[in-house]
Length: 425
Length: 212
Image 1: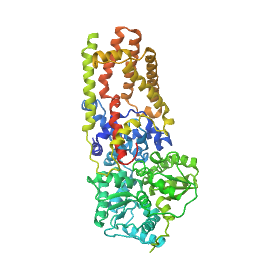
Image 2: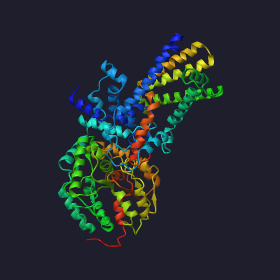
Image 3: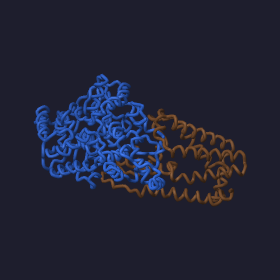
Image 4: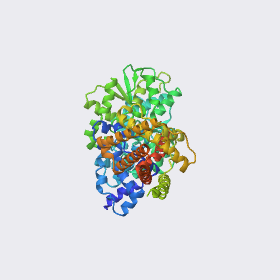
């Protein structure tokens, strides 16, 4: 057995738990999950059937964790696993799965397929079968602190530009602030107005907040790669930054996987509870609205819809808050047919967007979202994930669809009632 | 041979079935589960219990796309359970050899309906398995053996009831015993493991505030 195969199998063995064992014991190969996966529905290629993507883990489990499998393997009656069992799954798992977890919602026997695919990634990554773009992003995250190479210098210049543009002070490294805001590199580089919007809203809502110059990255390439060690290392940096500033809360920005990682997975990566509470920016905005600290004084009359980022809604549990906020500012808010916990993914989650090799497949997978949008004919689409926003922009452009895209924080900031106490500085 | 099938083989099959099922279920839980340090939105127990039941019904948005699996699946399972628990010879067997209590068996016409549903359902599911590109790709040897063995058991059962020959009854019992021995080592275990599988997923989603 080659060294890389042994590493991959060892990593997958380390991921085996009761949940995986129950799932692999139970799957009856009914194929229902295929109909929930946009990579299958848009390509009709059976290889993209979600449960098929877990095949390396099933083979390992079958050989090493079942009665007959153990006996057959010992007697040489079962073919040993080879590098091909991992290598051949690299493209299926990294290019053809956005980890959106829609399949997990429909399995008749309750298999959380996305959970198992995430564990397969650990094996592929350990064996060196990961897309080079994602590996490079992981290396940048580890060395620079950002998968896109956004440095502290870039952050400072973005803050300066946003302070000038918005007219609001953006606090940096404020000791004892209540909230620490994190950002995705995609926001800093592509949608810096998110930072200005935060400053405007927080200023009027009187929120004590800050940004850490030492660590501001919310995304976690370790999760996308399937490298728990890297994931834990990146989480520790957030913890160190938050502890240094003494914050009580960490705000997850408009980024899906960043939210699930820091809110739900981070404590498990580091093996202890987080020393702060995590709140998604939508949750905080809704809380501020409830407390009467965020009010809007204008509405947009356009027909508008909301794209649920999978990791914020389906796998994050933030489902009602964006709808309450949108109903406040958009009387013509309409839902797509499948929304909330059954939304269709933008196609770029789980690291697919960082993997250039997957671009043609991702463009094809956008067909699911296109059909949804064609049905409701909206002028504007709101979302709460900068990665979704990038992917949706690509898809809309490729398909020549005239729909404006905006982040929900930005939308609230634009319609904010600033009449009470103007706090621009 | 009849004595062997009715006697030692039956006890052997029953032992393998019971011990095997317990062993398989235990092995799932003994595999272990790391603690979850995240702060839950809500208790997970409600979600675990709810998902065990809600997954019996497909989501409305998915139902039209999976009609074959759903309809044939229900035909087969309902027919099979009706036969297993309410066919007159089974009720008598349960009363005299297993539990010591019996109940009113279903009438002959219901037996015919149940067996036709079960046969048709199983046949459609198996045809779907071999003809549909998705299920053809993901199915393995075990899926086919389980389907064929179940079919043979049902067939010999119907023949035994209709013909009333001892030979056919013994043949049916023999195939049942084979199925019982095969059961714990196969995907047929989903009859039991669907409960922890659904519960794990329901609990995981409930922690996050999502109805799974």
